Length: 348
Image 1 (cartoon, rainbow, N blue to C red):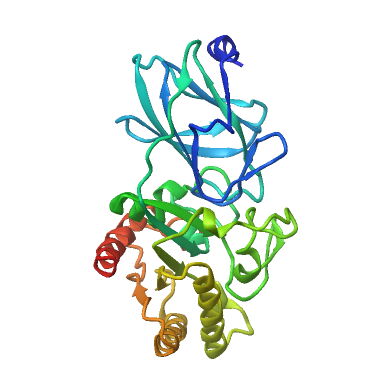
Image 2 (cartoon, rainbow, N blue to C red; image 1 turned 90 degrees about the vertical axis):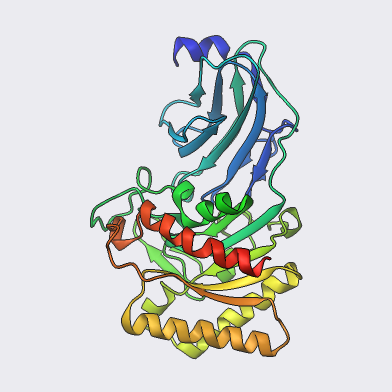
């Protein structure tokens, strides 16, 4: 631990402090520590201090830092240290801080213990968050998988190329001044279990969605949907489903309808957007589009007038490709620029 961090370690603010606000699915253990697994979880605070660090479980991944008007930057939770320096040498007075989790947490689960401030530093009242709320449900595209890489890597590059901050979901939320929750996992299907090397078998979205830590094996706690009631739910699934040998476009349409009806029971007034991602082409694009169109038509005819459809422009590689042909951060920005006006229109 650096001399700077050692000197300030006595002024610790626990993660349960009422001035710290969280956006995303988080769980507190019996000690009050905050656990999460899904990408894009955010920690917000207003602080009066000249130096800030956060205390994390070692090897908790990467985080994007937004501090006052400084350009966003990335910090890493190292393998053998619990203290991650955020900033030092700040001017005296109030500072606004937002920390966004970049990765997916099933391989190296992050745990947030709290902040560490300079002597005399303190957390102020809870920051005011945007009133508008969006939930994005999806797979690797929604996670921002591989969006900082520029290669044809096929392995799972867990730590240094996944950045949820630059995903289309987070970029849309910033563009609309909205809170953003990403319920997403790379490789996930709506309706089929998958096996990922290095991760193992994980369940489909229907099975995982109810759980705070997104896995019935890891934890039995069910997420309380009343903690975050979105105005809009964007569902971007199907890219992995259509790769399964048992895929049937009419069965997939029926599963979408069932999943949306389940969401409707939780979010009675939310707009639901069925989205088609940018990675599909040719026949696969056609069959998933058919399923989504059919699902919307059935739901609308059943009296749900808050179901919409949106298709991203297929990725042609003109903005390069990320890992395993996934969208780059630049492509995610283009996706956000397509989705923002659509959401503005349907949200009035």
